[in-house]
Amino acid sequence: MTDLTLLPLVVAVPLFLLIGYTLLDIVRRADLSGIRKLLWAVLVVVVPVVGTFIYLVARPFRDPAHLTSRGNERTHKIVELIESHAAGSISDDEFATAKNRVFDEADAAHRARYS
Image 1 (cartoon, rainbow, N blue to C red):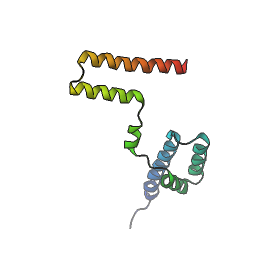
Image 2 (image 1 turned 120 degrees about the vertical axis):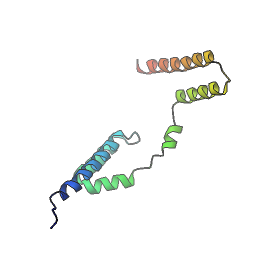
Image 3 (image 1 turned 120 degrees about the horizontal axis):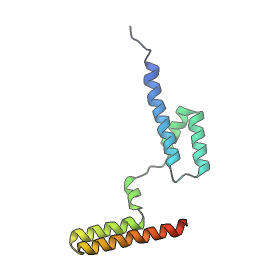
Image 4 (image 1 turned 90 degrees about the vertical axis):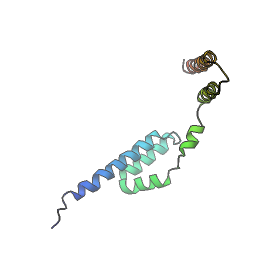
């Protein structure tokens, strides 16, 4: 005779983890507006299994390569500096100076935007 007392636990724990992952993904998505996030979250909470399945199937695929290619301008400048330094096109001092200039410009832009 088999003992089925653990079956609800074995099914419930992964299901709750999947629902939690789905809610976390909804909150962290930058491409969804606040009302769309709210609607998805309500669907997942009100109809957990169906809402989670629909969200995970309907959400757009986020290609990691596409996300990294959209990096900010400062990242691209630093990568170019690293490549130039590795190729020997610029010296250690030139690399350090240029790197500091990139970060100083970014800090100044950040201060100007948020002050």
